[in-house]
Length: 226
Ligand SMILES: Nc1ncnc2c1ncn2[C@@H]1O[C@H](COP(=O)(O)OP(=O)(O)O)[C@@H](O)[C@H]1O
Ligand SMILES: Nc1ccn([C@H]2C[C@H](O)[C@@H](COP(=O)(O)OP(=O)(O)O)O2)c(=O)n1
Image: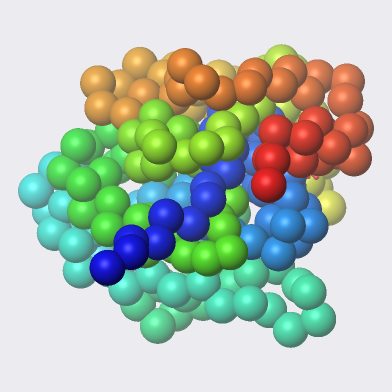
């Protein structure tokens, strides 16, 4: 019996505000591939743990929460933002805040929490292909991915982008606090023992500081060969 080769994967890793989400969505649309926003899974677990009143440093309790939380993505009508449904509740709005990002980063440093989310992430790999956005897509979850990119940009530029994005969504934030939150999250994500934020050895590094979105998309698409 012939075994079919696994569906191709393009991994897009990088720090907060480097453009992973935006670029992944545009590239997945262009290729007609599926999309995995792995950060949303960590945000969802952080949110569910908070809603249950758990101490986010209680590894056992948060792991049980990661194992039992039901997370679904639902395409929004009219090409709107994909909704994230956590235990039956549409938590999309709650998940996009910096508080949710910090909670996600905290619970993501617990190895057993990461383990609890592996099978769900692997299940997104289906024909015709997958664009996977996160911190460890190219290093841990899909190490055999044929196409890998690592996006970066200066912390100042990433803070500016996030500021504009959150303001447009009507959230009240300051540039200085965003930059220090982003830097604190970078440090925690890059220094944890398991699956730290770092480029895969075979990833193309793209510094997007000063680059427009269309230029980044073109550069990333050039990595994907038929
Ligand atoms: N190259 C770029 N130039 C300018 N703004 C960008 C660029 N890439 C992304 N953005 C904007 O920056 C914000 C953060 O991007 P996002 O894709 O959410 O980053 P990440 O997923 O890495 O945190 C968004 O508002 C997005 O439109
Ligand atoms: N593959 C992943 C994705 C996210 N995480 C953790 C670490 C990140 O700080 C948080 C939030 O990730 P997310 O990609 O949603 O955040 P940004 O959009 O980059 O600000 O989750 C992770 O550890 N591994």
